[in-house]
Amino acid sequence: MCSSRLLLSGLLLMGALAASPVLAQTPQAAADPEQPIRLEDVVVSARRMEDAAAAFVNEVAAPVPGRRIARWHEGICVGVVNLDPEVGQYIADRVSDVARELGLRAHEPECHPSILIVATQDASSFTRAFVEQRPVIFRPGGAGMSRGTGALERFISTDRAVRWWTVSQTTDPDTGASAVRMPGQFNQWRPSADGRDSVTNYAPNTPTRTTSRLSAQYREDLKRTFVIVDVDRLQGVTLAQLADYIAMVSLAQIDPDASPGQFETILNLFDHPEFAPGLTGWDKAYLAGLYESEWYRTDTTSQVQAIAQQISREYRDAEGAGLSDEP
Image 1: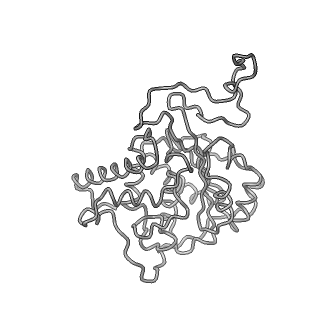
Image 2: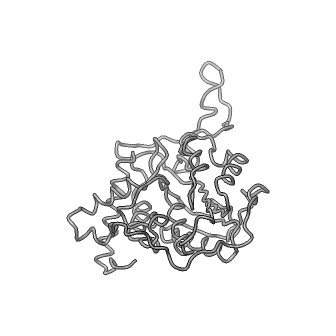
Image 3: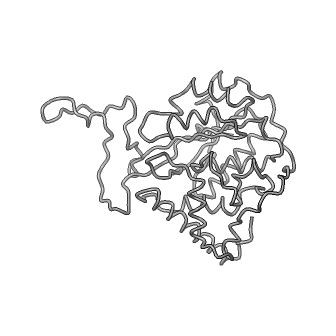
């Protein structure tokens, strides 16, 4: 498991667990819910695959307002805190394995966590104390790096078995540098034409390249994800289910208030665990579509369309190879 010393302090261990939570071996059954749509069934229904895929993406994706959907660019580092070492290692390995399947580097030794998973009791009190102690890591101050104050308060106060918070950054794809000004940023001093201090001394200096209405100059990168697990709310959930759920919300910007009940997805885990044994066809196709589609789409609408097209393409390719019936 990767080191998490960069973000930990005495406060982080407040209310820590001496051992792993008790995770059930079989999921609890829900009371006669409607059968959700399986990705595999869309192909033989009247509903077009791309329309269904776009509906799924629109339901679950949660980009920063005014920004496009972000994703990890090169790699991730997973840190797990307050769980039994074997349980924590299993979760870290599973998230890392899913990331590698998407073409990312993951779980390299001596890395600093970009995905930090913390298990605790009384998660709302713990989360509020954590945010109040280190607010800058949740809201770094650059424009468009988080979903805002209201969303952060909901992250703190809304009781959930698993809650998450992501930080993203508009990035110059050539240099990897931030394309938005960060607090305290100062470049080499250069006077303006009248000899006064110039705004260019503080703004990011990035090259201008040829763009069009179909392509954006900057990339949206995920930079940090926090996942808080409330062990008192995990009844009926297996360790494998929990690890897949965490992988899904860590590797994409997922809306915690989404209502994806019409789809067979791991995101239904805490409502209908019997329909979410692990990452489903929808989940795998969405992640593959997100990471295979072009990053330079100009807005969220065209990005959703590109991801939906990629989902359809990925599934058709799998079906042609005789893989469509795999879980």
